[in-house]
Image (cartoon, rainbow, N blue to C red; front, side, top):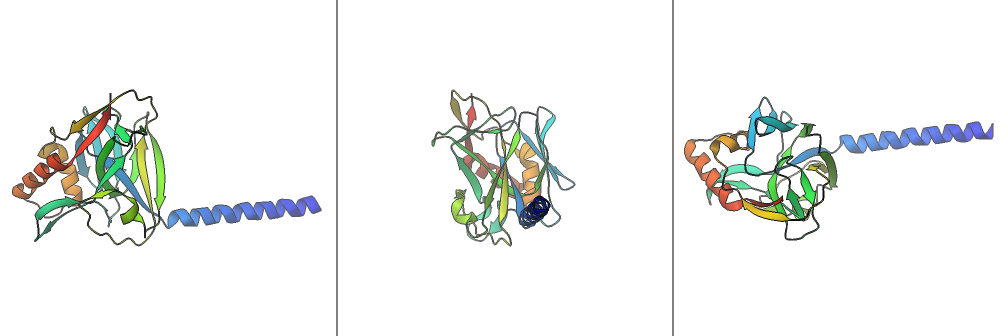
Length: 217
């Protein structure tokens, strides 16, 4: 009888833990870090952002109906059309083939990218998801953001990084010199509603100036 009683208590405790965990998960806003690198086409269509390399879709991200992106493109009277809240990941390099982030432990290595509200639905076989949870009150102070524009969040957030485990002997610095309007169009469509050719040209020039990263050699 005593064993049966403890079995019942254990089962009830496990169910309560699962319910609490499920509730905590459902309260989180889900975000994805998207690296900005050369030789990638960013395509946005039917609420899906696709990262395409050599005509192959490597990563696919579903976007909610009313997204709350942390990275924003907008017009301000102060400096015109520009991009804000670019995320700077320190201690990472990117594999330009798999688009996976590799943790190098080198504080000089960086990968810059955007942080979007969405859920990863497809990724390459060499990649896995790393999840990081931030309290909503600490997002703007804990993340290393470039051109900071305040974002009001309703809930705590979960950030998904697409990572790859591989040995790193050497990394190389790269600028975003090969990006153009056709490749980056999906990012502009995703983050910026009212657009014209002059605004787009200005944004592309701004990204070439702002964005750099380290790649795995």
